[in-house]
Image (cartoon, rainbow, N blue to C red; front, side, top):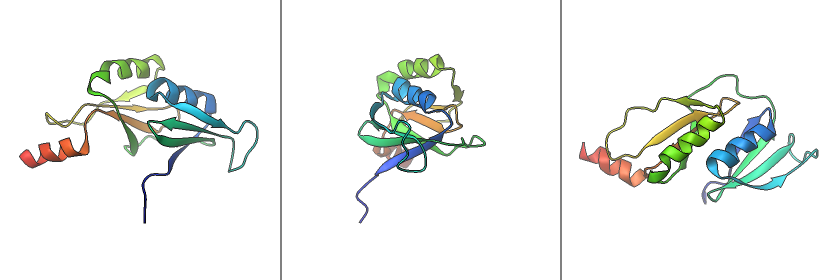
Length: 134
């Protein structure tokens, strides 16, 4: 039986730059750093982001940007602050998709290795309720 999400891993060319993205934008707390040791495929660091274990490993970045993404929940009143944090790192912000009122706000952005992240203020229940209303 699946109990839930275990962890998310991102491959990055520069662990320090990716750590800056995670800690600055997503308030990640670093909980492990392998240093020069490699217990897995390469050097790695682990973070806690809102109770989710996120791992980053040194390696070749994604070759292109796609819409595949990971979305983290943000508070409704955090939009402007999070947008400023993303801009402070000079990251590319992607125009969000059209939204209907009541399904929350989103900010989409790419990190330095072509991973797309979304910060979203809504919930699944709110979205389904809005969609059901037509």
